[in-house]
Length: 158
Image (cartoon, rainbow, N blue to C red; front, top):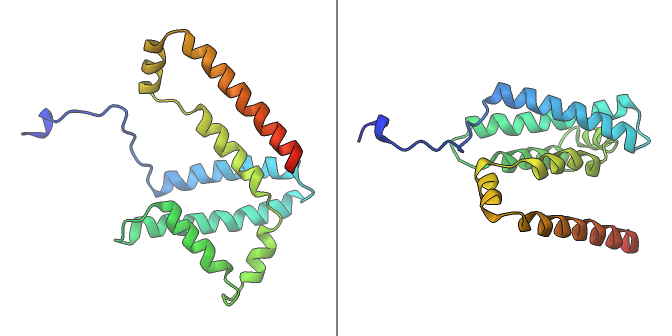
């Protein structure tokens, strides 16, 4: 079978290379800086320093993902780098923790979760089209119930 006869998966996405990851991570960091500045008492410079440290940790993990022959997901390598640089016996860990302490991690998660919520594939759209209008009503009730339930739990326990 030649490569011309192989089926093409149009929904498969090409993985970004390291340079594209760097640019995308920079954009996410800038969005997070705005959110962190609005949501916390940290100054822009404190937030910028903390996000710069997180950026370097993430990029180091991504470089390891590309270079190390052991095929682990990039989130594992990034987590490993983050753990290693914040261990108490690692030189400079107190400085890293001080800089990163000015970053609100819930604020970092918000744009990521928002993107995950709106990222819809063509397959999901075709399923929604074939399901009919009733799925829309169910989706509205599910999303409303989830939001109201989360707000009640947050109000009671947080």
